[in-house]
Image (cartoon, rainbow, N blue to C red; front, side, top):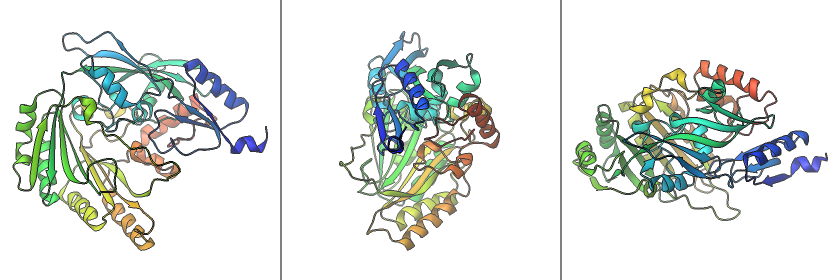
Length: 420
């Protein structure tokens, strides 16, 4: 094979799992590196890379295996190329839901394999916690079914270990019966410190039905309305229950609260498509899973957002069902964490100079000091040296063993790579 082939991108869009398996075997024969795109939202979705690019957009079916009865969960089968907006709409029509990502265009595959901290994480756990089985194409180009009973080590690795172990062409989930949700929007025009401390105290004893998200974004961020706001979701159509729980926050001066009962699909954000040829701005910062949102962490986050106009701070409450899962049951780290935190500045040429970049990095380093682990789904660049910090030490070693068993040649390396 010529060197030219190695420098080109061969884009493929298989329609069946068998076709995916054939493409993997072909890539192996031709020594082509493989990039897998499931959904098209993550950092590797839009940038071309040499080798074979396997896009799963044609494998996006959503099937319900019998409706839930008497409050029991239903089993649903979702194609590896589906996105969560379509899943929420389809399941919602039958009174079902799965806790998923925040944005409609987030792929089911990437989010689930990395864990999946969603709107109902305290009620139902991670997306990966709702996974009960999968169909996967291995590095050998074979189709394998996996679950807690079939190839259990592989199934364990899929629940938080990322895309290191194969191409998942079908996910099997438990979907939860739900008549609707209640949503609270708390717009903050006062000192965020008071609101965050009050929210932290509230969530220590809050029912698991409620999950809260804090965002403070600049006008230039297309993913959400500008400014600071605290959103709360109750995993049932009970607006009075949500209003009662959130009353201490709504009563604060400088907080304007509104409560509604939208469809779950309607609270998923719409990420606008970037202009053709436009590169998104760089991001300086990071994320972490924290045991506690203490006063020092709150102060640092509020000061960070105030210091850099083109910055974002994002927090989500954990606990509840998320913490019910034993640490060793999945590859996902930090089940004792009670908050997920992200902060960073947009690296916009002409607005951010070298000195400011270094100050942002220093401020983030001070924030991340107390984290238990980094959440891989929010890490948007390849940093091989950082991958061990996305797992507990014993889980990372187990993942390496499973990688050696299923992908000894590291065919699936275009991810937060766990080298065999």
